[in-house]
Image 1 (tube, rainbow, N blue to C red):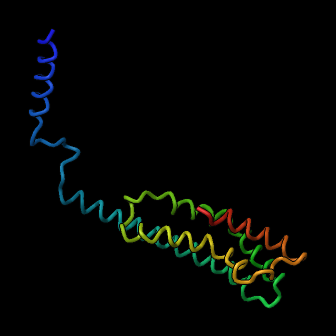
Image 2 (image 1 turned 135 degrees about the vertical axis):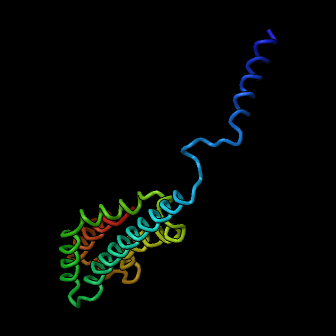
Image 3 (image 1 turned 60 degrees about the vertical axis):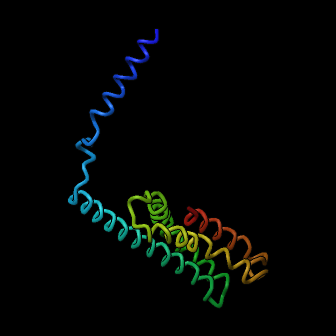
Amino acid sequence: MLKLPLALSACVLALTFSQCGNPPADNVNNNNGNSQHNEQVKAKSQEVERTLGEINSFAADVQRKVYTNPEVARGIDEAQALLDSKKQEMRAKVLAVKNTPAVEITPELEAKRGQLLYAAATGLGSLRITSPGKYDTPELKPKFDKLLQSYDETFKP
């Protein structure tokens, strides 16, 4: 009975040590492979960074419609129209950036990706904090609530 486990252990050890020093062919580390991977990471990082710029620029445009219009109701309407016009496109971009694996982008970009998505997602909601009561009138509250809901659906990761 003791001979079978010893024989199996000997076979496992023999197979294990017979592979020492010989990495599998697909794991051979060569400079060409690393260079190609680095170029892919660089290209993907540039793509993600460009997309993050588009997301944040669009979010700022929507926010600006509300912040800068002297007629608050009109500003909300303009922001809603702008958001509606590109909602699906922006949502797809947010999800693409969010779902990009960390190994496909540079560590520096990975560190700031979450911050940039968070900034876009929370930008419009801060209006309730900075201007309490301003958007809670019977005329403005339903419009502003709808805008906030659309904004959240678009930008929340």
